[in-house]
Image 1 (cartoon, one colour):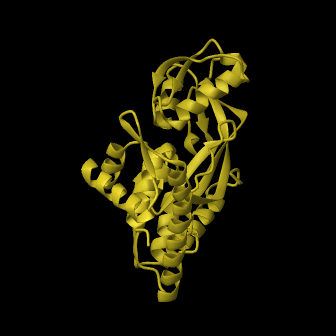
Image 2 (image 1 turned 180 degrees about the vertical axis):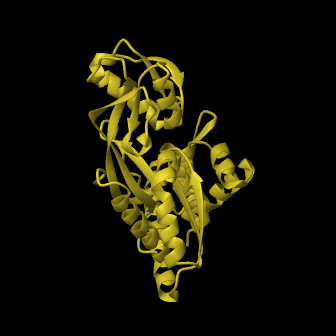
Image 3 (image 1 turned 90 degrees about the vertical axis):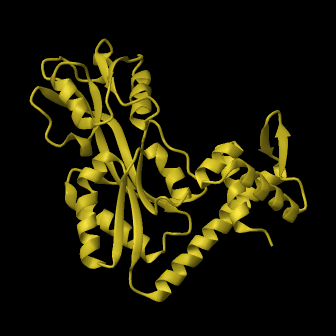
Length: 299
């Protein structure tokens, strides 16, 4: 019988690319990871790994085993969900991750409802960028997370994760009130305020400008939409701001709705959707999204 913990290491090697990265993710030494993978290969009785220069890569059989591993891990999550439902009552720690504007708007009422209806749950919140959500869920640092993508930059499905749509928001072009503009093309000569390189907001803004036929001139980087709006009000440039992040914009900012949507999903490990604690979080977040603002459209 193959060892599930070793299968998880093989899966993570396929995902992360190096033994050093797998070791860091699991707080092992690289030597320990190598030993565990060698033991897995002996258990399998066929070659799962091969050398490619100084790196170790998966053989076709190893890649096939990774696909089976995803199924096995999902089945274990489903089994855990079944046992939790049989025990009855909701208790224990639930780690919830979300992007900043959701932490500020959607999570507080959901947390209040969960604490009221399920007082034995220990709720822990982590704020993070959506690009970091998949790894945090796979590594079990999170149990439930709000992640988003944009219709112009869709995210490919992750074989280790399941999700349910939550909402879709209009994205606005925020411009100084004195600037004459109605479309993205009208601000091709303007300075831009973007998120930090590597964030989804940064990628989306650049891609949206490219679709409009130009490359943005980036003057400032800010990862907080409130800071972006303040810079826009100060005449420092223009920015893309999704509906949840608009709040009460400062004086001197005009918001132009674009044909661009940010789409939020509630995400969790595959197989965990029927876990009572996960289901309770999903229900509370859906209620919070419905109550937050009538203008937000269910996804």
